[in-house]
Image (cartoon, rainbow over all chains, first blue to last red; front, side):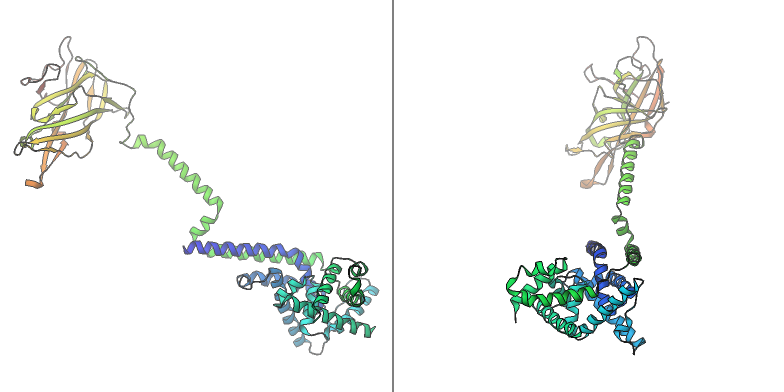
Length: 180
Length: 312
């Protein structure tokens, strides 16, 4: 009897592992973009996206009790890792601002400069949003989740997310317009 | 709150996310387009500011780390399982086990006839009864508890003779299948079959007994006499040749266990009194010249109880 239960548990765990592996190709990019919005470092964002999947793999037993789609659960993990990342960075470089963490890649210098300016403007505007609004915008626009998935990841109602989304965009519009 | 507008904005953002341009999206909502337009432009601007695609190399390396971690995790879990669970979960192990079981069954079925006396290999040879045959099978009774019976009837189905060289058996259906042991006590015998069997050496004799019943002298009660086995076994070597008559006497005895009401009677072969003797098979004789006869109280068609010949 106990052996049968153990086998069932093992099979269930194996199924979840397969589900997680199946999400990798699509959601690695989304999570990396989500992380990039918050930490501004391409390489670290990529590493963090990989770390999300490894952490999810180790924590799969706790996932089944959360009652949310695995995709949403991955962004919860990503959010926690982003927070940890920013704390570590803040500790190491207390004087550094978030924007100083933005790095320049190997692209065309002019294009990179333009990209950096756009990012600086948006980043500054996003800093003025509430934490929940920032979370909604990054999950909705950068990670590409539907508002319902964002609601599941944030444990909010769909209506609350849509409301935060509208409020965040209105604020961004005002801030970006004033800077322009 | 403006719940209806929030839903429209959300639907517009979904379409923008799929790559649709702002104008075509706004065309679907002319009444709200003035309010929607600046919001969608701000959303698009925000989105494009962080337009970042991870490098394929980084993604590939990360995927490899994930796959390795998954493989390690599964191996670790497999090692922690009880050995029988690990075995049970492997289809290849099941296949191997099934193959071994089938092989064992095939081998067992193949060798069982040779190993087990319960299924003797019988020669495709049917001995023919003949008054001048080279083999005579006789039944006798050694004196033990037979005096306690008025009669003891042994019903015999068949007789088996095992050849020494081939280990195969010759089976004989007795001409006389019922023998009253009280009529053949001590040196007396009763022939139950005579005929021709294959010449050669034999090592064992089976007598397949259907049942044994007896009538007690003291009470007249008819009782069943127990058998140690339906097949009484004697390992007594003897020979049969074409020019002689082999008289094989199979001596049975009834023994009692217990006393009074607890008394039980068992029929057993008596190896010390059993065995074969050979006499010359002269023309026209019966092949039993040395057998002293006892008074014949039976129909002429039945064999006559005779005295035992000396064992060979």
